[in-house]
Image (cartoon, rainbow, N blue to C red; front, side, top):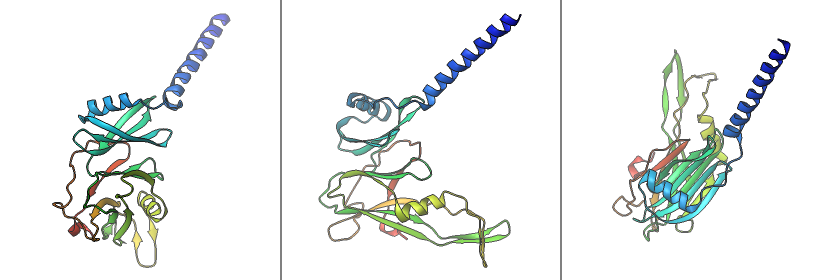
Length: 241
């Protein structure tokens, strides 16, 4: 009987070790080498019905997040996003609408990503982060958040595509707004979280004036997104605060 119990105990222990090893490999193993260009093209064609004409560059944000810049056969300048999940490289989506994206990898690592179709009328682009003024009463307490606008200029005539980590004031504001606020001062009790910063982009010509939709047209073709990926949509002049 004692021998039988020992055998059962050892068997259970071996089973636990095997299951733990499989789980560790599945969830915590080092990422495999990234996909070949042929595999990248096949996945984009299959999942997004875009025929790739040229892969411009492959950029790693970190070991588990990759951006692929590419041009389609119908001259869409686009980005595709992969993340290492469940022991595999998963295609998270693509953006061909413009094409500007914010990728929030976690609470504090945010990246601005762009790939812009060349156009002689386009000189530079401003990325705008906006939050409308917010005030009201919740649970008997008054709250107020002032309007906010952050601006970043990208010289797309020189930097047609790229990745830039969002830092400084932008990062501080965005990260703060991701967290619930519960501040008290002499006048107001702030007990409602502020609305998030929304992003937009605005194209400018060489005369420093905003280009109209007629002056500079872009594709409206995109896809579903996941994993903290948010496309940045174009703003018109009357949408600026």
